[in-house]
Length: 130
Image (cartoon, rainbow, N blue to C red):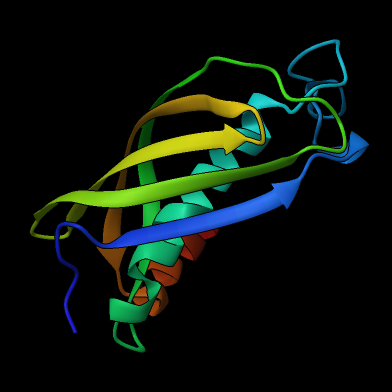
């Protein structure tokens, strides 16, 4: 199976104290932190394509342009959705959105690239020898 426009993924979690802006160091209040929202969006994008990848393939995030528009308190369920909007060679583009039980809390665009993890990690590890 190949990656196609329209593929969708979803990831969800419950906001805990560990997933707040305060805990991440990205803010001073105990509400769902933007770094955690971004991670949830990336996870939704991974879920959208995971079933279409060969055993020796993976993806890495390379760009994320999002807004975090509404705060979510501890204890509330949150989820992210991602949809493939473009496939250009190894570059994958997704529309991403995040929600809590009260409505949409953020959205934007995410890009990922198809990789061969073994080859990718060899290049990364070579940095240690430089």
